[in-house]
Length: 271
Image (cartoon, rainbow, N blue to C red; front, side, top):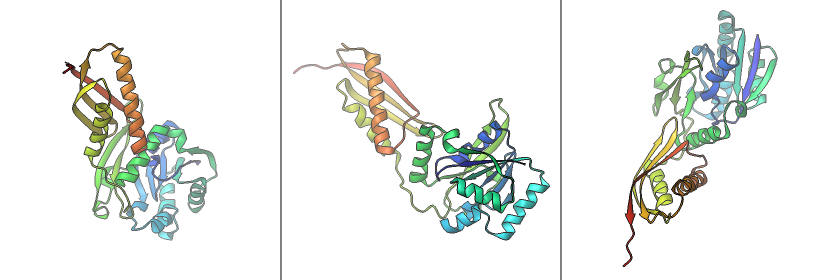
C-alpha cells in the first residue's frame, strides 16, 4: 500500500482540500478525523467531530478505541485499498494513526502549505475562529445529523479538472467547538463604507454588498466628486488596495474580489 501524510494546524482547511489533493496525486482513500473515506464516500469509522470535547475527539482521531480501530483495519482489507492519505495536525499525529492502523511507512510527507495558498489558509482560520465551522469530506447524506444540533449544512460538490465528480463536503459545528466569535454582516459593510467615505474623491457611498460564501467579495457603488483631474483607474486601484489592507488588518484575511461601480459624479460647489 502507498501511504502519504498530510498535516497542518487545526482550522487551516486540510479537509476542505483533501479530496482534490488526493485525486491529484492519485490516492483513492483518506483517513480524516477517525473516518476511512474511499473514493469520496465514508466506508468505515466514527468521526472525531461527534465527540463532546477536544480530548475525546483527539483520541477518536488517533484510533485509541479498539473496536473503532479494528473496524477501519478490516475495511482497509475489504476495500483492498492500495493508496491512502492520512490527515492530521502534525507529523507526530499522522505517524501515530499509521502505527495504530498498521499501515506501511509513509512514502512522502505533505503539508497544508503544499495544497493551500497563504490566502486560503488565512481565510480558513478566520472561518474556524468566527463561525466555528468544520468541514467533513463526505456527502451530507452520510452525516449523522442528530449529533450536530447547532449546524449541519451541505458543503459543495468536488470536481476534478476534467469535471469528474470526486466527492462532496459537509459543514458541521461540533459540540466541542464552543468558542467562536459571531461577526454580523453589517460589521463588514460598515468597515467597507468607512474605507470609501474617507477618500477625498468620494462624494457618497451609494451601496455596499458583502458576500462571504466560497469567495469573499465586496461590491461597492459610489458617487465621485468633480473635477476628475487625476487618473481614475489609478485612484480606484489605490482605493481597492486601501480596502484590502484595512480588511486584512481587522479580520486577518484578504477579500477575493473588490468590485467598484461608479454610478455618477457630482459637482462640488463652493459656498
